[in-house]
Length: 316
Image 1 (cartoon, helix red, strand yellow):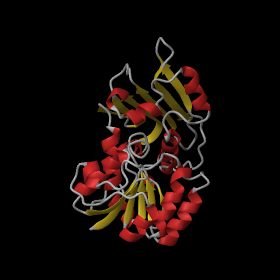
Image 2 (cartoon, rainbow, N blue to C red):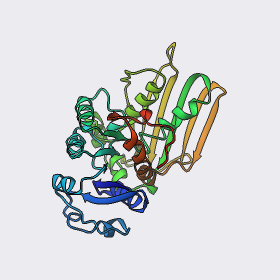
Image 3 (cartoon, rainbow, N blue to C red):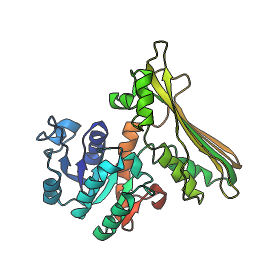
Image 4 (cartoon, one colour):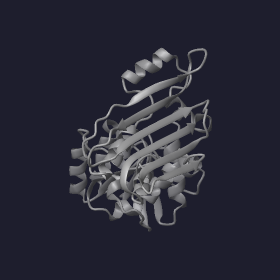
């Protein structure tokens, strides 16, 4: 069995822990979280699954004592926050699968080379994955585009009903904020979805374009009292001689005016339109994607990886 430590036990982290505990190929040998209401508690009680692991707030001590093969890291969206944690894991010889959105396509960020170098020294792989980025708005359309020749345009639209999502995601979307506060946080890149740029880079890279720095447009959705109830976020890249146009649109709203769905259009030969009614539910899908990536990461060449480096399908 593969020995795993769950690092970060927020709502996503606990969902990951549940999936990992139930998986017959994984032995969850440790759990880490600094929250006072979690440290010292049985993981089984927090996750609602059978486990005798006790949560620790001492990362280094836990990693050294448990000697994991892989760490399932779900602590932060931001690469500058998780880099030190990833280096800790690599320091004890563990591979890492993380939900950190900025790790979905890390190249071009200053920490990427440091992580890649440490991963190669540890002879382990590091992968950022999740439902978005990592699947719905990048990996899935990349796979679908393989069934078309002469692709001219790849368009993805994800519409999310925030009334069905966790409170933490509603807060990230700015729900309940005044417009002025939302706009100030938008300028600081401290509100909205983290990772739309990663999705754009992944899709572009699949078509042979390595350097993409397109702008992200973020618009608050506002009610009659000038209170935010969601946002619309967009980015796009125009077509070139050798690569298609790419368009990404994400709507997260407490008052969704369209059916909740993930829609992918591929303009090519043949053209295709794929609709996932209801959308891929982010929390549980991210947990499944992380745990299902473990055999891929354990079998990968050492270094910092993206989903483009992973085999299309690989079982245990």
